[in-house]
Amino acid sequence: MQNVEVTPRVWERILSIRAGNGCACCGRWTPGERAALDLYAPLARRDLGPVTVAQIGQSLDGRVATVTGDARDVSGPEGLAHLHRMRALVDGVLIGVRTAIHDRPQLTVRMCSGPNPARIVVDPRGRLTEDVALFRADGARRIVVQGVARPRPEGVEVVNLPLRDGWLDPRDIVTALHDLGLRNVMIEGGGITIARFLEAGLLNRLQVAVSPLLIGGGPQGLTLQSPVARLADAIRPETRAYGIGREVVFDCALTARAAEAWQPIHSAPRVAEAARAVRLR
Image (cartoon, rainbow, N blue to C red; front, side, top):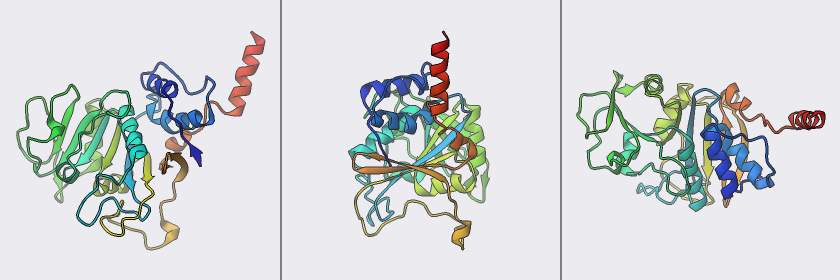
């Protein structure tokens, strides 16, 4: 497991990668800073094509909330800072309507520097009211994907898609977001929404942040609609583990392209190649 250290200078480099003005290959970094580059640079890059990543925080026993629905402190300060960094690196953050109603998240970047992503809510039946913070005009794009005709506050972009068996098809959602110019999207919650994108084969990456606490009951992180009957058929993504304070983030590559993004451009052959180029000048 690699321990991540997000110093101001390494975060500045990561944001420059997001803006297309930097790379992860050069510079002298501590092991913790290098781990930060390994974790965040694949999401910051815009030369890898569209990326859909999901992030979920849970307890040691796999819970995302208590039996009463309290989910506020499942992730500690380190996990929340990681989530805000993820938000700063993507074009848009998507949640389901249940998460929007019960958790009332702001989906803004507050625990690090970086741009606010577009805020996206999937609301098939138009249940979300107009008074939520998600709809507040603050310069970030606000988008509702819905399956019914319902007016939204001024400035909120509405994407109307057909309902299929009472649900919005994740493939239709991703296509619509790409058409809106949102290429790198994070599915932040809840577990049902993440599971639907996972089962549809639309996730490039899945990050599971595990906090050191035991809840003992309550909803689980991920429950698939079609669980496997045999372990031999289970999804076994290529995975790297990162320590962020007291929390552990499992970064899972679900596609070959996502795994290739891990290939460090600062690897030994490339470093040696660069050294030879320097000597030849």
